[in-house]
Image 1 (spheres, helix red, strand yellow):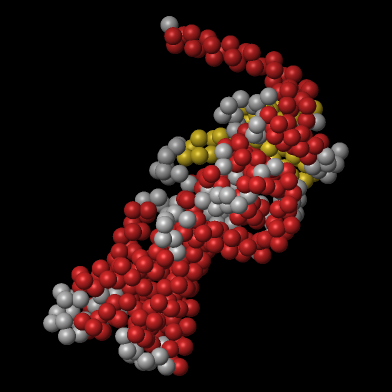
Image 2: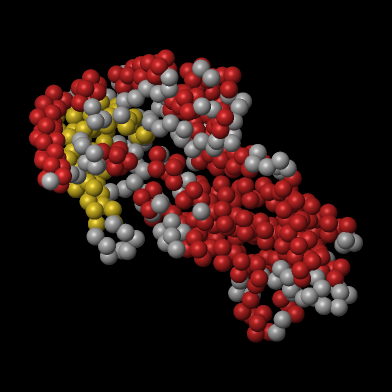
Length: 255
Length: 245
């Protein structure tokens, strides 16, 4: 077990190191990319969707606190869904438990978010939102999101090699999450029945957790996080069961 | 004879011809039965497509068979000797050496202790800081081989008995591999070359068309193998002649 954790750590750090060597700006891209993306979406949505422009200034922070955590989840899921396929070289040469690979993808995504998160806090504070001791409860939201990312990642990593068609579907799922998780609009302002449907997506609750704490000065609502927690545990169980069941089949299934 | 360390009982392995779950199965291995004993070197011989590589992957525990059982003594680790296991080419020789050693089952601490041995054997200490993508193929093979030799599996699996790199390193690596195989290391050696098998193996396993054609003392098995080979070639050339006509 120890050596598997060592391996996850080394491969995670290794992937990040290699990543920074691929460009002139290196690590700077970790924060530059989400910033540019936020700027782009702000330009696209601030006037159009929110209208009037009177709430434009608070919309920036609404957008940031949704988009940055979403980027974290999106990169973890995308990398994990391909993690076994991308490791087929290693998997064809030696035996390794398959859960290592989505874990590596989650580690790198988490480390990158560790750079983005302070930036997000800083921007929110600069926007005039007072940090209070309630902000500490954001830790609950982050832990819940770590579990959510890992669970969906395990499930995708386990299913994509078995049903290769899913490689086409995963980007669509991620995009669907982007448009339905309330990154650009406030779900609680939608009609009741629409809300009910959108809230089936556990990620909605996680994003609302960030905003409750950072923008609305509330503590993270633990009872609200129960749903994403249970949904994550279920996906985790299904994912790990598949990974174990097909442990020695994946090297044959990989293209 | 020594204790049995691993055995195959009626092992078969099939691939589907396409993703369609109703498509026909291709049986690469059909009914494979043999034992591997502690400390011996077993040679596996057979023609292209006989299922030798698949057999190695089963022995390494990378894949599981569709039928039959593979018994392995508890706690026994079998590993394929491979170069450049899990290398990330953008990273330095150091980083890759550590990562590769951990992939082979060491902890980070153990890997750090083994590093000196790797550098010494590879003879490319001056390049260890450089990214592996800047290495020549030979330098990469040197590093890969030096790392691979640090692995200490209970059963060493070899696909051909080959030294790597330039002339000098080929001799050095070939010699290291020989010494390893001729020690009390349990090993399975797959080769096309009857000469190699004769040189290193006490027993040989000949597989053909997914079946065990012969299993026993190397000389007996190989004599039969070599007698059959010309027939087979003749057969092929006859077919080729027919085709050409």
